[in-house]
Length: 175
Length: 102
Image 1 (cartoon, rainbow over the protein chains, first blue to last red):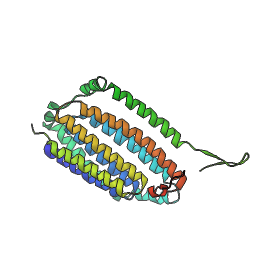
Image 2 (cartoon, rainbow over the protein chains, first blue to last red):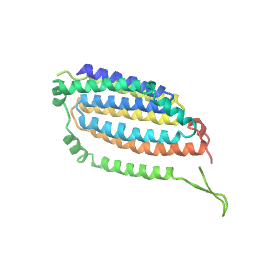
Image 3 (cartoon, helix red, strand yellow):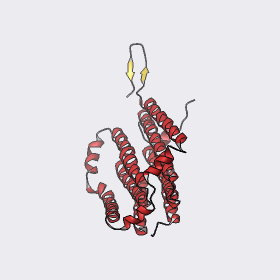
Image 4 (tube, rainbow over the protein chains, first blue to last red):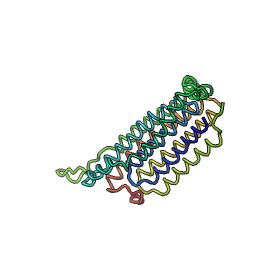
């Protein structure tokens, strides 16, 4: 089990180092997804399966897709078409593909050998997490709800298009 | 039962946090700065999960869920700010926005 952890940790460090050194934003996002997946494998090894699922669904699924969406939105102009063809070349996805293949081999190894028993004996079940979340931590849950509401309102306020008022008859929309 | 040693887990969280910190300091593209912030938050969550797994308590996972909610709110506001900066300055360079108006 320890060697599985060290391989996943190596994948996490390599992919995170690739994230902060890429020049192309989409390549960096691909490596970031691999980094989050390797951290999820580490969570699974540690017996926190519920949080590993949350990491994949919320972090790699929702937040990274938001990043990809904004990067695609910013990438306007004639240069984007040839960039599109360059993204489809193997140089862009072969590195994240190899690292993800290592992670899925580890996951299959854990699931289909008796290494799984080690995890199950020391795991913290989602039931305990839920009881703690809605028992002693109920104030934190409410604060998180208020924070998410503030995030929604702030994002709406900042993302709005503003009209610039030049003259009574001259309405020019900025961008 | 051979478990993962606590020290190596904390070292891994520290390495990931430092990588994200280097990214924040070195990169000037504002999308990469936000991405490096995500790396740092994720490393902090990793440390929490390690501590929760060491003492087999649910508190570490609860803290990670709070970090997850905070990261989601932070990313939505940060990406809206990036769109605003791109609309105003026509660039993603963080140094383009170093003047205050006031």
